[in-house]
Structures are given as C-alpha cells and as structure tokens.
Amino acid sequence: MKKKLLALLLATLMIVSFFAACTNDTPAVDTPATEAPTVDTPATPGADLEPTREHVPPPEGDWMTPFDRPVKILAAAEQGLNWFFQDGDDINNNPWTRLYAEYLNVHVEFEWTTTVDEIETRLNLAIAAGNLPDVFHIPRTADPRLFHELQSQGMLLDLTDAYRNYASQRIRDHELVDPYTIQGFTVDGRIYGIPRYYYGQIDQPWHMWFRKDWYEAAGSPEIRTVADLENLMRTFMNDFGASYGIAVDSDLEWLFRTAPMFGAYIGNIHNNEYFWRADETGRLRPGIAFPEFLVALEYWQNWFAEGFISPDFMTMDPWGRGQEDIVNGLVGVQCWWQWWGWANGPSIVGLQNNDAYFIPFNLPTLDGSTPARGQIFFPNTGVTVASANFQNPAALMKVISLVDHYVFSADTPMTPADIDYFMGEGREHAMTQIFQIIDPHADLTQFQYVLRALETGDDSELFTGGMMSKFRESRAWLDEQDPHGLGAFLQMGFAGSAYARSQHLFDHGHIVQTALWTTSLPEFAAAGNTGDLIMEEVMQIIVGNQPVEHFLTVLEQWYAQGGQIKEDAVNLHFGG
Image (cartoon, rainbow, N blue to C red; front, top):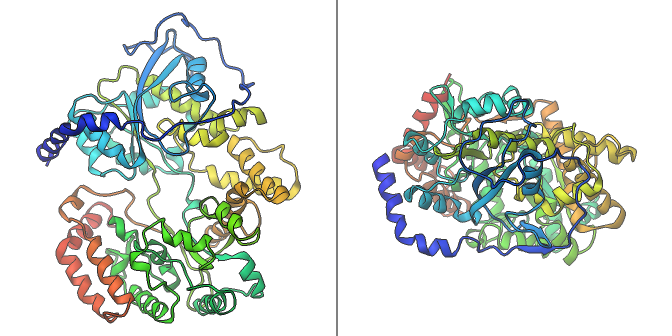
C-alpha cells in the first residue's frame, strides 16, 4: 500500500510546474486599515538578527516567554475567499504574523498557499518532492490515510515533548473535554499531530428552518409531528406560491438529515460517511441497515409524489440551484446547519424582504412526543503536523498557545479596536487556521454569554473577541437590520435561536452519537466507494422507479461490495 501511494505521489511530479503557477489563485482583497492593537506585547529580543530555521533552544519560563533570537517557521495553508488583507498587508505581513513576531519572536512565513479544494493535491506534490513545509494542516476532508502514511514513512515530527512542555495548559486541557480525539494522532504513545478539535457539539444538530414571513402569516403553527410539517409545506405551496415543499439537492445530504424524524440516523452517504450505532445485539451497524430507514424512504417517496421534493432534485448541484431557489422565494423549508444566516441570510433579505429569512425549529417526530434526536458525528476539524525536519517544535506550540490566548481565553482583555484588528473580516479564521486549536467549549460558552448580554443589554462580561463580534453582529441586525448580522442573530441571538434549540436537545438527552470516533479506519481502503450504490438506488426509490422494499436487496449488495468490510472494521476498533 505504501509503495503504491508513493508511486502515485511521484507520478504527480509531472504536474508540479502547473500547480506552482496556480498557488495563489485566490486574489487578495484589500480593506481599509484598522487601528493597531492596544494589547501590550513584550519587547522582542534579538530583533536585529535574521530569523533562523536552525534549532534555537527554547527559553526558560512558560509558553509566553519569547525566544532569545528570532525563529522562522515555513508554513503552508489553504487560502479561501475570506482572506481579506488590510492596506499594505499580505499573507506574510498581517496582524497575526506581526503578533507572533512581536510577542514570541517567531516569524511565520507561508511557503505556499492553495485553494481549499487543492490542498491535498498540493500536499501530495510536496511529499513527492521531499519538500514538506515546517508546519502544515491536514484537513478533515483529506484522504484519512494521509496522516498514517506520512507518519509511517517517518515524514512527521514527534511532537510529544514539545506539546507537553511548551503548549499552554488551556490547550492541553482539551483532552479533559475530549480524551479520545488526540488518540487518533498518537502512535505507540507518541503524539504526531495536534488535533484542531471543534467549536463544540452544540453546533452539530441540524434544524428545520422555515421562512419567517410565510410561517407567521400561516399563524405560526406548532410543528411537533411529521404531519404538522407536511401541512406547513402544503400551506407554503398553496397560499404563498412555493414551487415545492422542502429544499433537496443531488447529494441528498439535506434530505438524509431529516431521517431522525423517523428514528433513522444516516451519515453523509455522498462522502462515504456513515452513522454507526449499536443494534439490539450490541453490534455496530450503519444507519442504512436499521428498519427505520425504510420508514424514512417511504415518507420521502410520498413527499416526491406529492410535490414536496422538486422534480429536478437529481440534477440540482450541491450549493447551486437548491440554495438559489431558497433566496428566490421558491421554497420555504430547509433542513440545515446552525449557520443558515450566513449562508442565505443576506441574499434572501436583499432579494425578498427583511422578514423573509428562515428561522430554526427542532425536527419533529412521527408521534410528536419529543423532538427528533440530534446527531453527533466525529467533529474534529483536522490536524496540525510538522515535518520531520522541523527544528523548533516549541515555537509551534507557543504560536498555537498564543492564538488560543487571543481567540478563546478569558484572560485576554481586548478593546473594540483590538477585535477589528485581529478578528475583522474573519481574520481569526483565515490567517490563523493552521495554528488555531479550537476550544471544544467555545460555542456553548459564547452562546450563553452573548444571549445574556443581548437580553440584559450589558456586554461587560463578554471576554473573547468571538463573543463581542457575535454580540455586535446580532445588535446590528436588531438595531439596523444589517443583513450581515443575521448569521450571529439566528445562531445564538434570541431564545429561539439555533443554539437555543440545540441546547434544549442536550439538556433533555435528545442526542445520539456515532460510535465511529474518527474520520475513517485503515480497513476502509479495501471497501471502495460504497456510497455511490446507496445514492443511486435511493434516488430511484424516491422518484418511484423502485418500491421501498427494493432497498433490502440494495443493502445485501452494499454488504457484498464493501459494506461488510466497513462494518467489521468499525466493530473491531470500536465495538464493545
């Protein structure tokens, strides 16, 4: 397997020159400069010396102690559309790189950047050329074998000692919240990657979103049962001109996330990700193997027949027409993530009216006695690793601790000017991404503080830039109807917000967690693409070309074509 992968990587060298020309294909956007920070930074020793990649002994003291001479880190990162630079700034000279240099005497230079879609290809080219950056991020979307191949080939640095000695206590305490995630990047008791974790499980449950003005004009009916939901879809179609009932597109993700209404829990089949839980015997099985999935298929088939699902859904590209139909007023129901307000909010109020945005509700169930359970998938967002040749792992730990200190810690007093300088235009997400180890409590804590500040009008207790940004954005919507504030407002800005709905699920135990606490397993490589079969056959059932019972035959084929390999592997590693 290793020889095959390396041969593939070597073959990619033929196109190195092409990708070298495309490294920075996302244009940098200049924005007006904001005021420099008021946060004090320590004096930088050895400022007259050139930064070095050679080993520099870490200074005595805690993680805040700067190096005695300048240290350079050559990094690599995905560059997205949210990289907005102030006047005169660029990827190597911006508020964050200046902070690293001034506070820690660590100079970060990006050897290359590429688009999010091309990051794995670019990493493979660097591997084949034997020229890995000092520090880089393996995203969640990358081939799950990549980390293990790099580690087994001796290409990754053992970070154990640097992590234990030079990372802040806040970073290391994440293991108390989630002791299992870091084990996925630990080999023989040694740590080769620092997981980036996640903003909290509160952001995982999906909600049913209804167009606000239509919902209120329909009398704001209580939606507790699936029948209630169906009646609302009919009302939107009959009385408000909706072309169909619920937004669905060709990857079926939005539709599959309604499955908990029927007691079924399905993964992202289009990405070969399944949701695993124990059956009555204790064996871990994918959600598609439970009888409740047949119930969901029956309802979805009926929905298509009644016109609730667009007749064109099989040709509607993800993130394409399905979203366009929402902002163009053709559909008033969507099952979606908690960040709906950022995705569609500004567009729909711009094209429709200020009350045309969607509001979240917990998913109903067949009997309506409780809301549907929220699905919790393995949430880690990737891993930060270092090349085996990297000489200063303590510098990496100091930088990730500094980013955490500014973005998440209650011990960093920040003025509104500081927030604009470091966080404005999404800078804390874009420019710190490979160094940002996310606080798994971040969004729950942020929600509690922001909601209380909005309810009382007192923002004096807000202690992170994220909290203050969400508070200001929510107020911008409430006070000025600024559509760019809709995302924060709908996520956490009122008692019926998405996070409030999620918190209700957690408070009452209406949660189900996948048994597969990793992105993939090594054995999965032999299983092939099992998702294509499910996607194709489910579509045929939905449109009525096959009866619901046909899925039992499909399931047998799924097991024969690789599903059994996956189920056996999940039970081997996580069963019991």
